[in-house]
Image 1 (cartoon, rainbow, N blue to C red):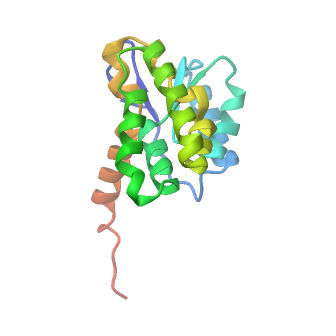
Image 2: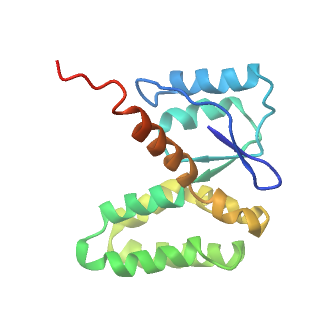
Image 3: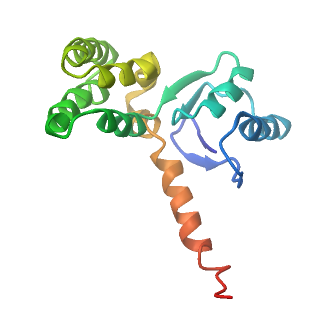
Length: 171
């Protein structure tokens, strides 16, 4: 878990290995953060796993931002190969809009268009709902950090890179 202060600086809050992303595992992470004095966050950026979503029910009042990168991957999986370029352009009109109002207009236009062209794509976008647009409520300078979980993904990738070979034994 990473925290982002009002100044935009990122801080590692905790790093854990868990057998899965189940509610019980995420609940333990959140309980530990609370025990260590972390106040209820104003915003949490999530990748859409249900376990974390259920665990966050304990933090009422916390706004949720769905990772726009993970959601794009889901949309691409649901989209026929021949339409992926067009779908990506339409999606980026939502996630790279100049403000929240333009993003909501692009969101509605996306749903209208893709409900006709490819219903699974539209359903996938609807699944994330307004949580894709939460970052627009924050200062524009923070949008890049808040619209995706890329920072934590990069940290996890680096952690695996440095530890993967440390315990390798051929026999």
